[in-house]
Image (cartoon, rainbow, N blue to C red):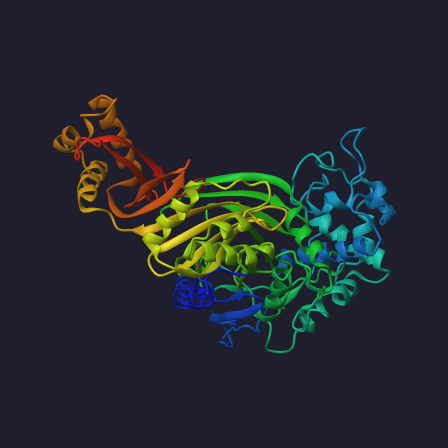
Length: 597
């Protein structure tokens, strides 16, 4: 579930920005035609074509136009193999030679190399080079299986299996053949029977000749002078496991809906062609392939100042952690002049599809701008994990005590072995004084099934409550945080001058508010504020937040800054001098994230 009831509306509000970005990228990259699709909660919520699918006929592309998806096919190859594993037809740690005895002709780089396995082929750690040593595929005849098999005799591996990531199209060609052997049918028939047909992917094909007339986009290569020139599709034949499929945005939306439907883990009956745990396994079981960090030109406040991505290649999918999202699943494809990408966010229930018909086009830019637009709209939030059902009773008991204190009801809501705390009556009274009566709640996040954070439905302001339950379903602890509170005029006056030092140093403000009680020298203080200014620019005091820390109410002032992310300020005033700051410190509002503008 998603805590924000306006999530879908917020996501849809980004569609005009997505359209503008796609139109701009099509022109900037000189792409003849592209189609963008956005999948939300299992539905193709947005799909639009730009430019033309064919320069000669001027046909407009749409969600049903067919493009070759290239290496995105690898995810189908991997999932078909996993479904055979689930049925007991093979094991991932089987050597390839169990299904393809002809692979005994491979030449290993060292005598102590272990035989390469299906798992290593799935994760591109088999030691095979990127490409085979066969002649390039032809547009006149499909490549026969015997040609692929015969090429293995005497073929040297580039690396010892299991030691190095090297993306290998040949590896997935061999996986495709292994799928066919294990399924006792052709690879194409196995994928069609196990995945395409059950998912209703009737616009997904293996050969260009099978695509209905007028449905296949023409792909192009740019030339130094003149209009782009068309490609003639190649026939992969036995090499189809690495990149043979053609599909439409509408069909790929069905596929992404199935992939996203594996989340969250749950008790509901299985309804897809492959069990949900296997789908999740294909995303998460990866070999780490590297960390990339690049400075970004962040155009808007809140945008990341760096592009930092940690990659791992799973079973037919690349899994990433980025500055914006902690789980991104993706795969791109580039073949025959088509450049394609699918990317989805399992924790957010959202996926993006970008198909283009130009060699060298970069669909990743279109997808990134699409996700940026969805994020800025405010609807790209993570799913709230399921909380233990005992929370319903625990929260009702808590609300009753909160709204009308009763000593016996207070004791009854606490977990056995959890002592009463005399200060908690005062704590609850403090919340009620600020927020008035509360009549309900909504979950914000679950740290684990018996620990969650809730937004209380109160008369005034925003009260967030963290609560933990014991094994008996009763409360072991709770903590409230009051947000968006007003600041007393006298405190606001001091806070404004202290925070003003971040934007511009003022010796008078320093002498009046910080110097009287400070343990730092003036030079040390100047250096501190110079560093804050360099990262955040000028900041302003926005509101106050109050929480119970170590048994006492602690209040923080929330700051809005020009760049580098917002901050909070803890400010303690000397009780004997309303202008003297006894102690202060600044903290970043978001911990563990990349710096933002």
